[in-house]
Each structure stands twice: as structure tokens, then as C-alpha cells.
Image (cartoon, rainbow, N blue to C red; front, side, top):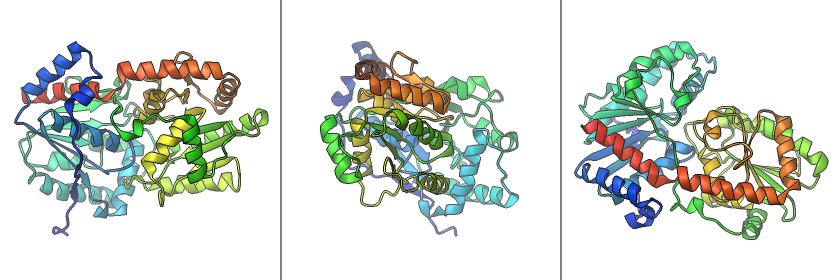
Amino acid sequence: MSSRTFLKKVIFQEQINPADFLKFLSSRKKKELLNQTSHLQGKRVVHINATTAGGGVAEILKSLIPYLRALGIESDWYAIDPKVGANFFVITNKIHDALQGAPVEITDREWIEYEETNKLIAVELDKIDCDILAINDPQPLLAGCYSRCSKHKIYFSHIDTSAVFKPVWEKLLPSIISYHRIVFSNINFVNGSLPRYKIKIFTPAIDPLAPKQKIVSKKKARQYLKNHGGIPLGASLIAQISRFDVWKNPLGVIQAFRMVQKSYPKARLALVGFNEAKDNPSAVVVYKDIAARVGKSREIFLFFDPKNKNISEFTTMAQNGADIIVNNSVKEGFGLVVAEAMWKQKPVIGGPASGIRKQICDGKNGFIVKSAEELAQRIIFLLKNPKKRNELGKAARKTVFKNFLFPRLVSDHLKLYRSCLK
């Protein structure tokens, strides 16, 4: 077992030019970022997470590492090899749910497997030379603690831990506290038992240079969705782009859509959640439940199997082609797909999750709803009022430009790294 490799280095083919992203910063912010960069020359940062695809963490790291390298900072990204075994990710899926408050049962045997796998990952971490080691989420959490290196260690929690399932939380708490810094995306996600002096808050952001953020005409996007997804051209399209997860509440979206159909029988719903994240085995269960409920409906389109699909391109076209974007999450670390849709000037209706409320100001740049009935009402309202859709979309893009673009997030990271090295 010890001969196996548990970490896989992510290779980047393309390089980016700093000028391409510095243009999104004001002169003052640009000067501040370059000043931080000057203090980190010659230092090396390494990020570890669960998977290279699917979910917001992978999306962030996919852009963060090239940005850091463009600024002259040595940086690498390693993900857990999927061959570590499906059972490991079943266990960490349970841990993830428990940290968000679900009362899950994790057996002694499962705890042992989780710990032993992390010990093997730690052995590989000890062979990686860096000044700062950043561990993302609970999958490699213990590995960072077990690692005997004297690196400055940062734990990034992309999970809402404000109302945890205590038996699981209490087992993990000593490991989390052992890190030099603990980073959350939202102040409301911080558990009260954590030492406040170690806490940093980083609001996530989207990369304006990523192909996924491309804006194309609605006509072109709809033709693509017809060709590659069978969605008819003339229908009003509502879309939720998020993985099939109980916390995303896709059943609530379907329930609301059934109400909308009474007023708009020709409307169509697309649930786009391609199963590419290897650390989320429960997605298959949720998808099968949704598929059984949808049955042979011609009005609801489910996109789950990534086979023969360009996932990034399809997602981009779904965001550009939809009349209304929904993100009905009850729990959400941030919801990068919300910012992505807002950047594309789409009216977004979000669920009650704290991460979404961080982005949407109800009635000003989108809507926040708390029930299927309210969701249906807002969808109907927006379908009736194209002018309001346009107004909300423009306001949404301004919000993202001001608060949620990647150069700002890079600046946050640089300040954090420098504070550790001090």
C-alpha cells in the first residue's frame, strides 16, 4: 500500500500575462498588489485539495496558481488521486455533511480509514518543498497536521461550520486549530469554538480571463443547447447550474417549475450538474432520485453524465442561453455559479444560503427566495417583465466587477501569505 501515490500534481499548459488581469484593478489596488508580490519573490506556495474538477475549490485553484506564477511566485497544486478509493470519498462526504449540520454516523472503521489515508498523504507532503502549505477542506485536513514539515500551514474551509454536528466536529477541531491560519469565505460560517485570532475571511471570486466567463449571444447559446442538449429554441429557459446535491435543493426547483408551467406551459427547465467531482459519490444517488421524479417529462432536462460533453463549454452556453438562472441552495459556501451568471448579466434567483446572500441584494441585482412557492412567483414575475430582467442583469454585472473578480482574491491571498511569513 505504501508504494501507491496519493497526490497528483496538476499540470498547467498555458501561461497568463499579468497585464491581462491587472487591468481589472484600480491604480491604488494594482499598486498594493504589486507591493505584496515584491515581498514574496523566491517563496513557494503549495495548495492541496480533493479533486481537479467539479466544485468551486477546483475552479478557484485552476485560476489561482497561474495568477501567482504570472506574478513571479512559485506555486503548485496537488489533488488527491481518485485511485485512493471510492470509500475514502464516501467517508469524507459524510464529514462534509456533518460539518454543515447533518446528523451522520461515521463508524470507528471509517474514522480509521480516513486517518490512515491522511497519514499516507502526509508522507508525500513531507517530500514537497514549500514555504506555505495550504490545505483545502476536510479531505486532506489531517494530512496537513500529520506532516512533520515546518511549513506555515493554512486551512481553507469552504464549508459553513456555523451549525455543525458536534460528534464529528469535536473529533476534527484539534486538527483544525493546529493550523497557523484558518480561512473561511464568509464570517457567518465560522464556528464559535475556533480561535478568532487565527481566522481570516476571503470572499471567493471568478476569473474574468477563464473561457467559462465568456459572453456569447443568447441566439448562439440557444442554438448550441438545441444541438447538444435537445432544448427547443423558442421556449423560455430557466436553468440551475450546480451539482446534484441535497443542499442545492433541486427538488425545490422542480416543484417551483411545476407551478410556473401553469402560467407558462411552454417554459423549459434545465438542471445542469455534470458528475465530474470524484469526491462527491452521493451525487449519483441524488441524481437517480431526481430522474425518477422527472420521469419522461419533455419540459425538464437533466444533464449529469459528462460523457461526450464539453462540460465547461456546455455550462457557459447554459448560463448565456437561459432567460433566468436559479441557485436554490439551502447551504452554500459561496456559489461561484451565481457570480458567473451575474457576470453574464443574467437575473439570478437565489435560495436562502448565506453564501448566495453575500452576492445578491434582494430586488436590486437579483432575488432571494425561501420557498418553492416564492421561487415560482419570482420566475413568473421575471418571465412577464423582460425589462426588469435586463435591469437586474446589468446591476448584477456591476456587483461582480466591483466585488467578485479574481484579481481582488489574489490580493487577499498575497496578504495572507505575507502575514504568515512575518
